[in-house]
Amino acid sequence: MTDQLKELYRQVYELTKSKCTNRSGKDNSCGRCCSPASCIDSVTVARSFGIGISDPPTGHTFIVDGACSLEPWERPLCTIHHCEIFGRGGFYNDPTGEDTARYFELRNLISETHEEEEFGHVPSEHD
Ligand code: SF4
Ligand code: SF4
Image (cartoon, rainbow, N blue to C red; front, side):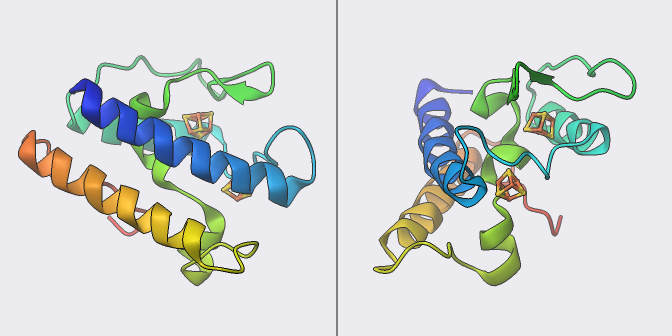
């Protein structure tokens, strides 16, 4: 994976993280979408892109000290995920729609870059 693609994942992570934090009203995201099963799904998708990640210990997540210990590009499925995007197609706290538009712009860029790098299309919950 190129540095360009890693940087795109970092940007979409920063954007969705800010929305998770905002939604939870705390310093950390609510983390409701993290579970041992989600970690395994994430590892499966990462491996399909040639990213070598070890399984988390059985029955555990990659959460360490309240946050995922993987880099954003090491867990493409989770980095792309946001419950508001997948639930209603946009962020709630986004009066101008700018953040939602930026999210989809980044996601399209990631998808295009994946295709250029011949990894396949960007993962989604519907795959
Ligand atoms: S994507 Fe949704 S469920 Fe997951 S941490 Fe963010 S706000 Fe919570
Ligand atoms: S963000 Fe990290 S801890 Fe949460 S499900 Fe994805 S890989 Fe697991």
